Image 1 (cartoon, one colour):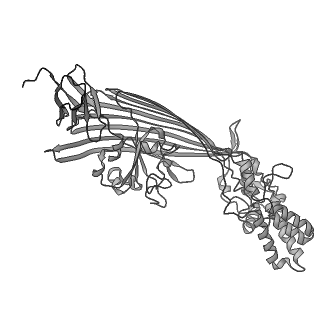
Image 2 (cartoon, rainbow, N blue to C red):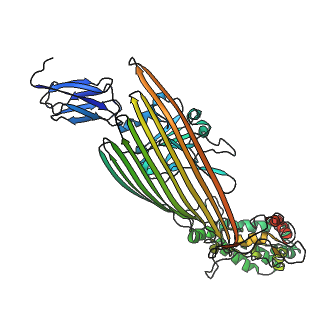
Image 3 (cartoon, one colour):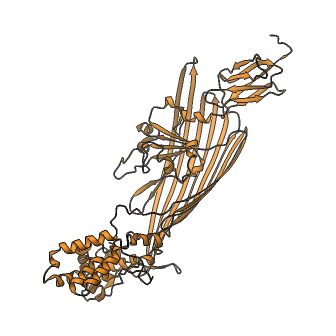
Length: 625
């Protein structure tokens, strides 16, 4: 074939981001002048093309369905290798199952997808919050609702093709499945497999659904550097719209007194005094003022003045809780991402830091995350993927709750006395005279509660470390036959500790709880030593996953698509939980006392039998059991 001297021929191949040929891609000459005759051609089944065009042509444009169109500037070279990148607006047209990526029309089960554009619209701090409101049916960490009364109800998480489980013990005999550690800024998209079809891929563990997460990767011949900082402040607010305020409480207490026939007539004074002697039942200041008036301890004018002062205080207790025990939650999140891609290698790195101050005054946490991934094309038919993710975190959790202080309170209660000192709820405020005599006669430890002193005591500490490391070999025998071998190893250490101060109400109450008088001598025997109580718990996770997979995908006669997947997988997940409790623990000397568990198993005789039953009948919420 002869060509005019003004013509030139170029050839080449069009491939996707993975180096796979793109058949039927359209290549055309870019027009330089209006009305110019343009040359065009499509690639063959192997992605190759040959195009004859004018020597004056400066550019060609390549397009392919589902990929970004690309213009290539022509040089003196006659051969070109052209790489097309997937069109971001069409990424939703494919479904990632973890084992393979298939088109939407070939997906047989129910699924939902959240892409990177949706993820970028709002800065959130967890994977769960990312899916709330974006995945239909996803609520409270569950996809398919409550599927078991005692078993796990959370979905299986798959990150870059590997199932990842974070099952730990809560220390109460329950195994809890948590969301795996992950930097959310690394997420490219999330696919949620909802129905039972997911079990055909992942087995019974997928009965609660599967969350498939794909992380970001740098494009070829690109350098991407990004940094983000997110600061979030939420004003603390305790909703009181459904609660009665102090004025309503005083009116109810007045109505109770007016409707009580025992507070009418000659026996009213003795009846009122009996009620005052059982303060655990009538510890409210308004009721006590009314009863004191009936006993003659205060005048009617004094009673009315007290009730008026109490009624004018709105939601005083909740205001004190906000002022002295709460704060505005504040969180900081910083992320640095670096990606570099070439023809032979793709590298991604991300570093994240989070710091959270929760609404409780002494509750906070921080964490560091490092993610490294590298893909190397060793040959035209072999590539190697390597990656690791490390996460370290520590935190403090406040155990004492001012809205459950260990005694009854009403809206006009306060956390401070009139002189500004800390309010103390004494044993006399909660127990009857007979109960107080038991505490006194046996010399039990004080049962007073000073809420603002309790806040900073008995804090729980946590330290966490986790690591996931994987390697994956990808063999490309032909365009339609591939083999993949992958291995991932996981390790995690999740440690908690709590030092209960001997001055705290929780320790004094526990020591008194196990005091006995088996001999009837009137002397209490403390079966638990009085001192600090130190509790530790450790969840250790070790897991590995090895998978081999052969993918067949071939089109016959340009109309018959045959897709098959063959593979095998071996997985082991081992979680160990150990906990220790040390009594009379000295954090400086690391010493503690031994206890006799046999004695502790029988504490319903002697001191506490009388105390227990009397308190149980009068006020079930008076003490913690």
